[in-house]
Amino acid sequence: MRINIENQKLPDVYIKSGRECYLDPVRKKLIYITPEETVRQQVVSYLIDVVNVPKEAIFVEERLSHYHIESKRRADIIVHGMKDEVMYPILIVECKSPDVYLDEKAHEQVFDYCNALGADYAVVCNGYEMYCYKYSEAKGEYEELNTIPSYLEILDGKGEVKVQEEQSVRIPFEKIEKHLTDIFAQFPEDYYGEDISKTTPMEIAKVAFNLQEALYDVNYQMPVGDYGIFRLIEDYGIRMLSYGNAGGGQFFAPYRSFLIEYKGSTEFVSFAFSTYTRTEKNSPVKTCMSVAHDNEKETHHALQLVFDDNVQVVDGKVTFYHSGRIAVGNIGSGKIDDLRAFVEEQYPKIVDGKRFNMGTLMNDHLWNIDQPDVIEVIVNCISYALIRDEYREYVKQRKK
Image: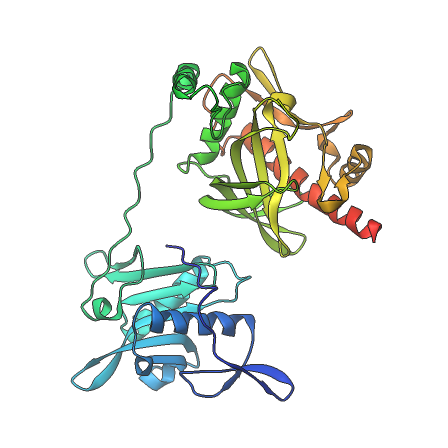
């Protein structure tokens, strides 16, 4: 469960000793504003407004020692129930700042609090994502829920356990061409498809379909680790995302997302397919793989690799090239020669004459993203996309 609580109402802001503070509605005192405190206040607001928790049942930054536990630790938020006029913990929330990834350690921390306090419900949140769990006596573990139950449902011990969706079976390799032919036959004359264009040559359309299916198949994950200029923190699976490109277009689609660390910053890089056409009249509709980049400034397509123009297929051997075309915001097109020199300094392995070479695959079997040759293509595309964004920033600074 991923709930964005950015729009939750925050407390009034006041100045104390020259610093901005929230007037906390639960603790009823001024609290210095930090990224983590903002998340904490958003969660409190969500609990009161959406989950219908009475304000008096919420304790914030509560010491575990207040519950006769020998510990100096504090729980971010504790929600209480009432039995025989005695309050008792029923839900514990662990809050992290937005730049903190909710890894296994964050989850184990809140589970540890729940075990110590006897609370059956656990929530962990960083402002962008929120996960809720309920302890199962039968299984002896915390099970993820589809959503945070209402306060009354929590008191009754209710909660809908998240059911893992069955993964669809992939089309066998030898049936890909027929599958695409059948799909294209269903399109109206003026409709070219949403992700693979019916006018893309079949040999290239088969390549696009194979790679798209590999990226969307969550049964396989790209191994975490160091990949040269970036480190993969987690293969994040599928996210429904909306991104813009330099030309003002918008794309909403399922993306395969990778959480990475790049030069000290934690960022997302995501892959999706779409049909693509240039603005010129009567331009053909082609198939495009987009590599989207979330950084601290914006989200956008850092790389658009048009398969019809850049993918070469010879006797089943597929090479993924890119021409180097690049748009730099409102400035216009960047110089390919300059970009090539920029890439050569940081990632020379992909420079191939006047083009950039993302790697080669044999299109005679189904691809998976844990296969070494597929990993190489993905890594090269991510690395190239990151460097392209650095080049864009470089050009913008030079124009100032």
